[in-house]
Length: 319
Image 1: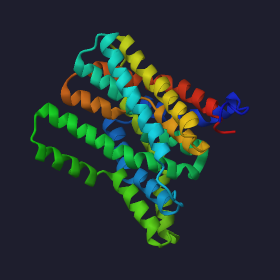
Image 2: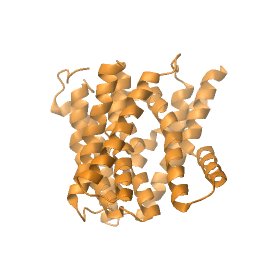
Image 3: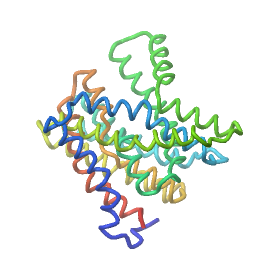
Image 4: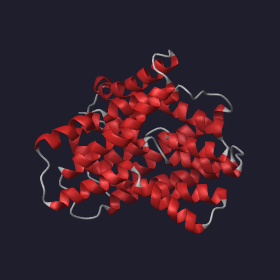
């Protein structure tokens, strides 16, 4: 796992182009008014609430889970994105003269990627079903951690009481489709029951729609984001998200915790995903840095067409 293992451009394009091609389909469809932005949102809602949970549940319910807790895997990923957040926030304040609230959002943008709509499709395209467990092991911890951070930020801004904060966090986790699918899949895996026949085929068919629907919806949402304002900030955040974060993950995963190839690839590809739309929702909620984050989402999604291909080549994925 130290190089490209002889991959050529054609092999990389075979992985990357179908993923970003579907994003382009969604973007063009909304721009040309073939479908409305609301329709694209509805497609994304279907993927998030039904299709992706079906994929994750079936994957975990039919897979052998690790016998030990993957501390090194989690440390590689979450340690790296934590460092990326802190470094981006520090440099944003010192070099780009961001306001404190803008620097916080920039750090969040460098840490929180579009893992569901970009990371999962790339990994599934490259590795198939075997990548399901490594994906779930990151999402299973990333989702509650993200909810904690999100709730703390929202409640702090609103100066809400601590009890309200706890209720908001509990409600968010208890109604999160992906988190519930992961928990249910793990429990089913340990139950001794076997998923087969029509239920398995139903989940397989439903889960197969998740990736294309998510990508088309993402394209529709990107049609709303322009590249206005100070481009230096958007480029800085994009560089930290697409280059620095996955590089930190690779260093920790390959040279410190010595992760197996499939786990290393999953962590790096997840970290290399462009800025997540959820960061824009935080900017909108706090009415700060909206133009900066919108620009970072658009730029990082555009640049990810190249950067993810480079990371796949570097990791030797697809050979």
